[in-house]
Image 1 (tube, rainbow, N blue to C red):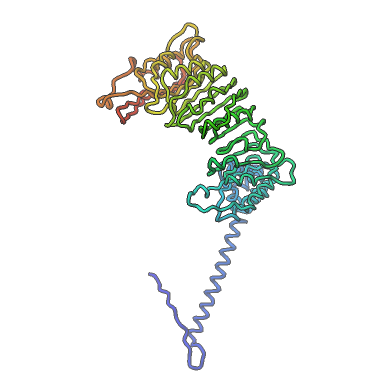
Image 2 (image 1 turned 180 degrees about the vertical axis):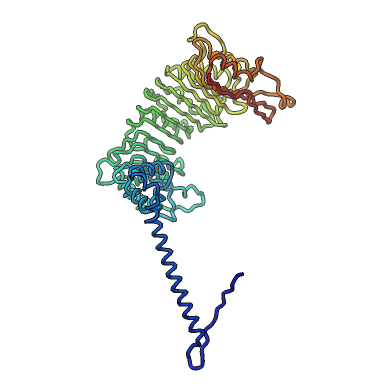
Length: 514
């Protein structure tokens, strides 16, 4: 039963004093108030005791493990995305270990919030203070400016100054800020070499129009930093004042064709390069396209953001890559047919030992595909994911070449092929099966993975019950491969297509460990 709280007004007698009952009530109220204060004090002492003595005495983690081992566990926790501040809030012992482990404080990721600037600065200073003299990884991302209707708030100058004061410890620096703010990162004025430890630089000056791009600059001082990795977008490479001669990895997006080729000339020692290229605004006023020979480039990922591949054709015709091993070309649904003739010209001119080819979201014909593959005899891994549905090549001619036997293994089509993942139209699965079984032949290909997504145009009646397209029982392929001692993963998927309707069926999905 709930008891209602009754408020009693103390009475007075004519002589001005209280009655005996009211006096006793005041005494009880005072005792209750004193007891409440005492209870709150005891609860606070209990919480403090739990956070200190009890946690310390009953914490099996720090009571069993030496602090050196505990700090290593903390490092793994923070590396997996955990907060170092959470560790320091558990108890005094954990806080002491966290504060005494500088490596826990070296990664500083700040998503700038204009309504909480002081907290961002304090967060940054805490990391710098507890990280000792170790190299720092700093990421400043201004997410608020991505909101179209959000008001513009200038980034706190104290935050920028604090980052500049530790420029001699920059190892990784990511700046996703207002374009004009990039020029504010100048490093310490007292330091001769502003960023001697900088290994990776990421610059993302968003929301700058074509008229602003030439004015977007990054320059920290007279002595240029020497990062080995750089990632940037929406700014000309000549406006990034670094020592390009030591760069080994480049990831550039939102740049124009002449800037892409100029970039390869600026970074002659780059081994990995990822380029997303826009077309030129006006080909008549654009600077001449230079020819480039890049002797060290081993990995090239090329993405077109143009309506037509022909708009960036010089990337194939003006470039020579004699040591290219991995090539990925990616388009989009707007892109037209891949300029296969120019691509073949690049491969033949370069005489490169191409081992991996990935063609994604491009339009291909069977002749185009076979012509490109013929120019890459050293290929080990092939992946083709064309624009669907009209960009698919017919696969029967390709697998006819792959399944063709030859007395001399070196005369086989793609003799070194290990892995293939391809999508296209197919009439029969027999050449695909023969291609898989050739791995058991003397001097056969070292195949390990085969994935074929065969599109088949069918009538309405064939959607539910498609006719067989193999003279052999595909369900016995596992036994056949195992019997021949072939270790291979095989996935054959048939995609029945009628108008806009598609039905996908896995015919074979096996992994054989012979």
